[in-house]
Image (cartoon, rainbow, N blue to C red; front, side):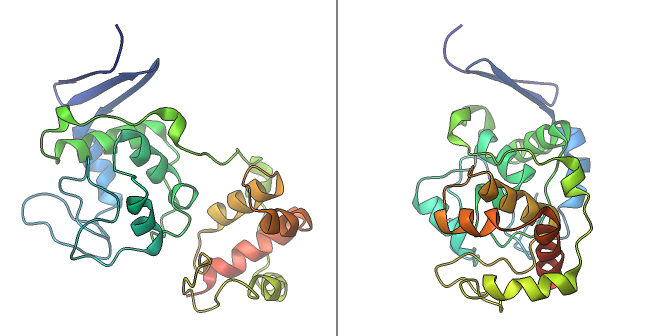
Length: 232
């Protein structure tokens, strides 16, 4: 069968798109959502909290609700045509900073594909006409390369990271403001390490960051990550 087929059976959603399968259980997704509800509300009468409410999220242009102060990254993503479909939600929930570099969502991400699929099914169930919402092409989502777990397990020294951070502060703002260059204040350690190693391997195409990352040892990156995560 050509094209995309989307069915909803007993609370489970199945997507077949270009040979890739996605499935999720909305009831299980409601349980996963408990980790999100300190920042997001969903359901009847939901309003904004730290993050925007998530009613009718599917098909919504990123950063488009008029009465919420989105990060510059999400507003730019929406202006460039990004909408919340299964593919973009999966990428964002797994690693927010990897998809939207200037996001202000300080969430380390869900590593479990099953949890992400269930959460996406729950979000879809709280959207209008979810069966009519198309999916994006899988190839449209950039992914950072995997980092060796031994590198991710390195415990960084934040004091040493503070010493190294002076070079970072020549461009990035110490107060966390975004003045044309993404803020790195408050980034989760794991995400900081993944992004820096993506530059180090040249998977991310910024020549300045590639040069900086190439001169940093694994322990240096871990120290910087530990330092910036503690900054407010």
